[in-house]
Amino acid sequence: MFVKLPTVDARRLKLIVLAAIIAAFVRVMLQPLIPEGNNQVDPSVVADAGLLIPAFILYAIIAYIVMGYSFTMVEKRLPWTKMKKGIAYGLLFGLIWVAYLFEPIPLGEGMSFVELLGYPIADGVSVLLLGILLGHFVATEQEVSNRTSTGGLSALLFVPLMMLVIRLFEYVIVDIYSSFDDRTLDTIIWVVVTGLCVGIVYCQIRPGLPTETASGRAVVFGVFFFGIPITFVNFFVVLALDVDIADMGLRTAMDILAVILGVLIVEKIPSRSLAVISVKSD
Image (cartoon, rainbow, N blue to C red):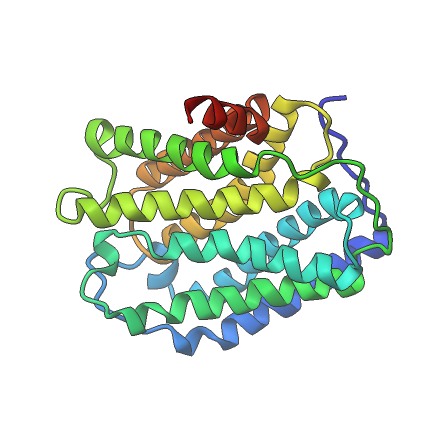
């Protein structure tokens, strides 16, 4: 079978929903940490109607429920204790989430680094809390994994490389919304560092991926463990501000494609192959 999707019984589903609700309300309580700033675009229809807070709470709960289901996909196959599974999952999801918050775009212009820290603190703490709750209430005691976390070196090479190649295509050819023209070096550094974060997450999550094929691992990781958090991160902006939805959708889809292709290359060229190449070159 291409992907072994887990079944979630009513009890575990209720616990996932409970964890999502708690994490969502903690995120709302941390909102004062985020400065208002000087937005260069108009607020969304939702914000204009005064419905942003309730819409955000509902949006966050749905996002966390979906992330909780993703947790059930891998946790049984990860060779860790319940709490370590939850903490690691929260940290790994948070790593990708926070990395995207530092993308150089015009919306962030004029804000100091200290001001920008409000976003990763608020989002990172709530995602970590979600992971801890999932570890405590949802994870199993099983510590079984017959698969090794291969591809470490190649993941840190090919995932950032594919993200850079596709992002350059988006910046130069498609001309997506970005600060690439004014902050070219900063943007390239951000893409590479973000790609490294994604590669690190892949190396840690790989033993738990519920599939035995290279293409299956690439798709499952690219969609569930990268695509889900990034889609929710990106489209929160759409919820709050009047931005180009097509642009946001395109960049999200292209980033997911880049990660899928990068992981697929990693699965086809294990790190030991790179070691052999390195020895021969010496």
